[in-house]
Length: 335
Ligand code: KG4
Ligand code: ZN
Image 1 (cartoon, protein in one colour):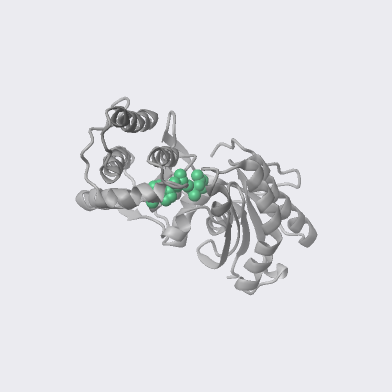
Image 2 (cartoon, protein in one colour):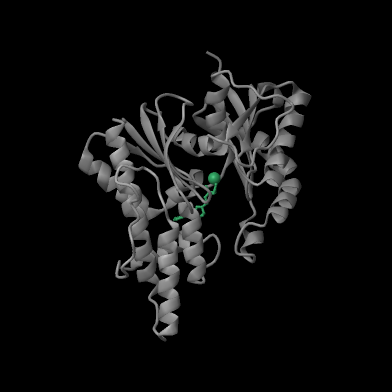
């Protein structure tokens, strides 16, 4: 059988990335131009700055991805691109580049949901086994997604307020750590102890929804109150206490859903899947359960990249999904 080669584009936030993926599983190239340095001094992503950077890098990133993969346009079966959700100005730069090239080379175009991409990053590690449960944890999302089969997504729980990554970034900011704060909190937590009494927010007993704004506020109040009393905060211990609360709630709800839905595999997706505490918590819970396979992508595939969009896009393409030249960016796209 003929190999399927897909060219993928991701530009929903602050990385411009183009990849070439073979059969939805093998990375031939995955070029990522990150803008993190430019946004650091603002303490977050500035949409207008992000769009300008995408315009500057997109052509070079395309050329590099084709060169590294050692393929020409004739080899490409489909062009897949993140359609949403994300920053509209950023999305449109990737989408317009993808549309122009699909049109010029007469190649089918397939729009992909950013979270489908994060989920399918796992297929670049090992084959997916259905039914499965995906724990999606990123800067914009916290969701439990049940999948009966390929490209069938059912959101069974989501955050009612802050996303996990967002809570991490805000807590990091409170502790005067650089953006993005998640990795810094993770690093401090590894050497700290869970000494601060912070809440675990379970919501309804049956619910798979999450809430992290209360926990975030509790951390901010702890820092504020210490300052007023002239006391020193131990950042390592506060980071460890915050992470302990996050991990306990995420792991507990994930395992409960995995059992209820009788899944074969749990996969983790999104930038926060890089978190060492979360990985360890899930590994321990799955080992104790003994029946469920756990897959977590390597760090390079956890944060935004086009390879994951190519893996998801290949499955969408095989299912017959096609997008027209009227494709628009959808900043609030539903999975
Ligand atoms: O998926 P992603 O790259 O972008 C979005 O689509 O949102 O996720 C970025 C988020 C940021 O909030 C960042 O702080 C967080 O992932 N993150 C982490 C870690 N590495 C990245 N959070 C906790 N621990 C980490 N090791
Ligand atoms: Zn993402």
